[in-house]
Image 1 (cartoon, rainbow, N blue to C red):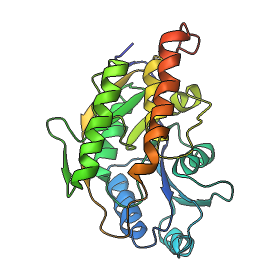
Image 2 (tube, rainbow, N blue to C red):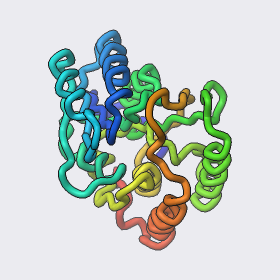
Image 3 (cartoon, rainbow, N blue to C red):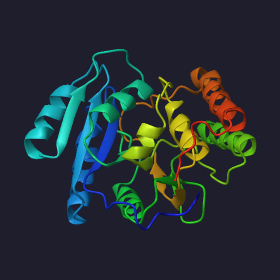
Length: 255
C-alpha cells in the first residue's frame, strides 16, 4: 500500500531526534530555529538531542539552551557510540507518536520538517525528503561527496526497484508504529539512514516524497567518512534486500 490512510489517528507530539558529537558551535542556531519554526506553526514538539560522547562543550551548551527552550530534551549516550547508535538511543527515549531525524549542523531546513508533520497528519506513515527532485536543492555540496551520493542512490534504486532517489539522506519522518515495525535496528553508523527507510518500504508502510533543501555545515567538520562507509552501506542494503526477496512477507505490515 502506498497511499495515505485518511482514518489514521491524528498526531499529538512530534519528536525531533538529533545525534550530536562535538557540535557546540552548530547546536544553538539549529535548536533555536527549529523551536521557533515549530512554535510559529503550532506544532507540539520535543527536541531530543543525543550527546554521543562529545569531547567539546556540547553538553554544557545543551544545558544552557535547555534553560531557554523548554521543549529541548538533551540526553547522553554513555554506551557505545556511533551515528546510528545515537539515533536509536534517541528513538528509545522520545515520547512522540511521530519522529523526524535531523542533523545537528543545521543542514536540514526546519521549514521542511513542518511540511513533514503536515503530511504525516494526512495519514502517511513515512515522509521522505529528496534534494534531487524538482523543487529541492543543495548549497555548497562537496563535489566528491555528491558524486558518491548519486552513485550510491542509483545503486539502491536499481536493486530495490524504487523511485526514491535520496535514500541515504537521514532527514526523514515516521509515525512511531513504523519505527517499532522496523525493529530491530542493527546499523550502528550512518548506514542507519538507509536501514530505516528501506525496511519501511519493504515492510509495506505507506510513504511519500517531497522536495527539500540542504546546505553544508558552517561550523566544524562532517562526521561521515566516505572511505569508512562503503562496506557498511552494502551490508545493510544486502540485509534488507534478502528480506525483500526471500522472507515471503513474514515482516510485512498487515492492514
